[in-house]
Image (cartoon, rainbow, N blue to C red):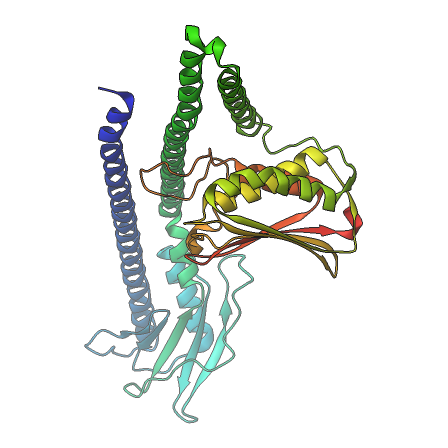
Length: 436
């Protein structure tokens, strides 16, 4: 079985395997994140519950001490009411002295290891207001500020006090430090996994580009090699010496096809290597109109063979520019070559040169098949060719526009493309005055 057949069999399998890996990876990441979130949430709820129990026990003990100090009886029901996550109301059913209350609170909180800053207030039934006590600090956290507003009241009690724990949420957050550490490790693992998936996708893309390049190169070299082989067979015939014109014609075919192969090899070596995007530009004065006319004359036989037309319209007052003549010639040839390749029937190409506000504008336009909008950003990439199915009716390695873009950039010019599928393509090169 041939290599091409093998790649055709295994390529879909590889793509399906990659898709399965990606889907399983995404599901695994989602599952890990969900499990981690669940455990962190459970740990936080458990910490809140434990802290609430400890606070309730401490405040109940304070209520008992106040009742004992005032020789009073506590209500039968639980005297501690959890009004909000960080605010508790304690019903003592007896008068409360602020200094005694604060002493009991500090003592009980220390006994129960509640290192929480708190503020308290005592309800005054005569004024129907919560009389603010003060903010008691256990730690060195100066970010916690006392409440400006009055602490909330309770309509159900007559003798009670309220305690607000300003640093409750921060204490819970600090107690979950180990969970945050594990979450950070998990995040790093996920990021590494995502990076690995990106690398896999890139390698897949590179493999596809490599496969397409090899297929295209095989097709591109096959035709000229077949022509050379056929011409060599004809030249080896004994009677060919009696037909010098025919001998010359087949010799010319060998020479032209060999030159074509050499140019393709040089392009691949120049643009396919690591320095393919760094071109050496040697600028010199170039008479642009004459150069473009010579290029058009070179393209005429090819257009005549296909019945196409190439119209040159030079309307600029600028006759000479500073450029590398070799690279400039290749730039225009590549653009004209693409215009011919991607014309559906008879090529109808225009080469326009006009003045612009900032310099000179060169436009190559055709009425060919055009390029889909979603692919326009890809055409200047190395080895990229607009998909045409499995039929290699359009020759090339996908290096022409990549080389053209780099050559234009090396000159300090700008290149852009406008195209509509089924209506044609226009490529324009902007040559600013300052780099002429």
